[in-house]
Length: 557
Image (cartoon, rainbow, N blue to C red; front, side, top):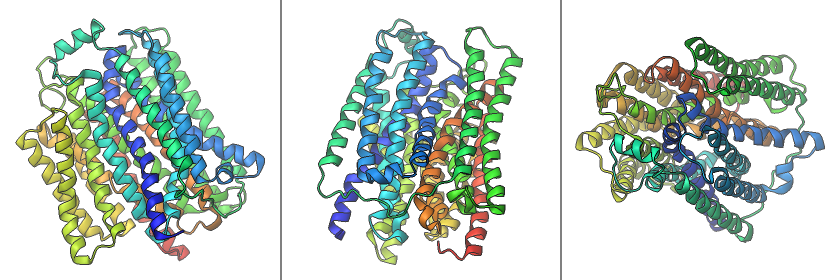
């Protein structure tokens, strides 16, 4: 395929990356709204992420199990292009299901919330299929050595979606007016703000999914592309993942059962729920550890999991997606929750309401856009001198896009807020200069910066704490392509299967946010961010450990 067709194909491909970002980041506004509208606690509100990201895991796992049963890679049989088309059609179904699920819903009807979760789960299933195909597709559209740069470019478009998604959804649900907290509560109670607007939003999104599917299907410049490797079975890996799934379903099923009678939970019940959630979390870690240790002794039956860089990378993807999602998803509650009627929130800043959160959630996800735009610079092969200039200019251009997008929506940041975030960007730029485009060094530096940012957020207050938490988006921004590239390095014929295992570990976005939500219910919302510190700490360990593993194998990275 010619270089020009490669560029055309990549341009078409990145449209689906935009959709993922738009919907995923919109959950940051949708979650606090659901908490208010359906009268649920912080853990329940995080089930939006559980349904959405859990679908990624279930979708990838089903593909793996079904492929194993017929001894043929289903996705490879379809081709990456058709896999994306089928995924878009499935997501469209989920978006359209949102309409009947919420028809006639009124404030306080918790049962309707669970129907919303089903619709989001179907959307997520479609995204799972799209992402399983799209990531290796992007890598296959050129030299594998520059695959991470194409993923960064696609990630930059994804992050543009994450930046405008919260703004658009906030406008759709709450309108352009800035309601006071009391006014907003009264309007929701009187059903003046309802789920009708959400219905319209998802009908529109569903239509866009169908248009994108048609664009992919009828595009002559977009190759079908298939992996030329034979399907490799991995019965031991399959059995381990099935057991893990049953454990997670059992844990969350038990927790759901404790909410069924609608009574107010005692302290003992809340602590039990937290313990069960940690059991689910540790089940994932234990499964990875079992695969790591067992496959190293007897690799037969483990498939791609016999490679330690992949198994370590699976847990890295799990913690990375988990920390990226949980920081943003719990941010709304951090800014809303007042302290003993003082009019201040957990950070000592003025309490915000649902209609005022979009601007900060947009800024958090915009931080990911900034980093990914910088990461995509290499795709255009600039000279070393020009590249150094772009490393400084591009982040602030991207910041200008965030400010402009919010300004159009009627949201304005104060001078102090702009200055605080500009300083955070400067720290990120220094990190890029130190990393020198090296995946391992990049992970080490940005994981360490993530730990420092979260610790400052935990122990500081006011804007210092807020922007320390917001900086998490800047430091997460560049991690996905680094982890993905390092994890599949040297896998050979197991590359396709390894990619599927990595997509399954988007499960982190389904498990870690509810764990943080319950930590917030039992303790405080600010202290619940210790889980983000733990996630970044593992990513720092992974950077050191995976380097040792790949060096030992003599694999280039």
